[in-house]
Length: 307
View (tube, rainbow, N blue to C red):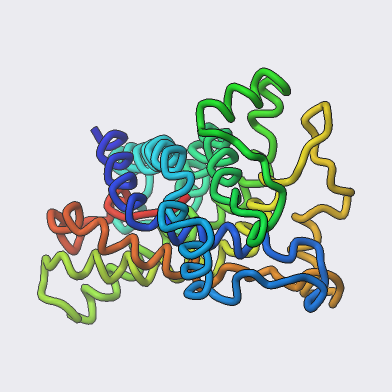
């Protein structure tokens, strides 16, 4: 039941936050491996991106990739949070004194997140491709021209096999491991602090809601550099064997090392504003689930995670 509830709740939030994910994806692909000032900035910020996409591609384009996004949320969060819930209910996350172990929580969250992300990787890759597709005048990154999720999965599978379907999966693991472990630790820690400080009435659902929003901000700060690299790896063009055509100094290495070396593409935190909004606005979207919680409940399936 934890698997089903976690997946369905994530899908509910995804319907409302997918437009922010579309904006985030395009802003992260903008200026890929190019020095600042050498490329046209179609999207100046998250608000300008919304207006631009709506004007050029149409308002419906803000929900591009919704199908695979919903499926990925169901699979990824169902597996991640359901697995974590089983570990938590088994008592493996608490010390002999009965206190929550933050190190065990982080480790369990990281492993559960990695499992969900790896299994759902083909869906996430297609989602990225569809969200990046745009009219030529505002297109960023490689344009795959898919007709839909099932057509894309079938085409990639027939052309490149399982290797092609799971292309970029390993590159997504640092992103999910960092995000999942950070989220589950900060969520439970924030709930404990809010309860101790008596910020809200005892047993109030507001404790879980506030903790979810604080945790969302922490997740984005920790995960965004890996998210930029993962998005670019998924969206890179491929050769006849299904391998990335980018040179060894790929999007991943450049995104992570450029800000430190002062070289190309200082966009390690690209899409940060959009990603922050994406995470924080997911928490209210889970209010029907949160309303049933108590301040002492640390079950992670009550907390949203964009994956």
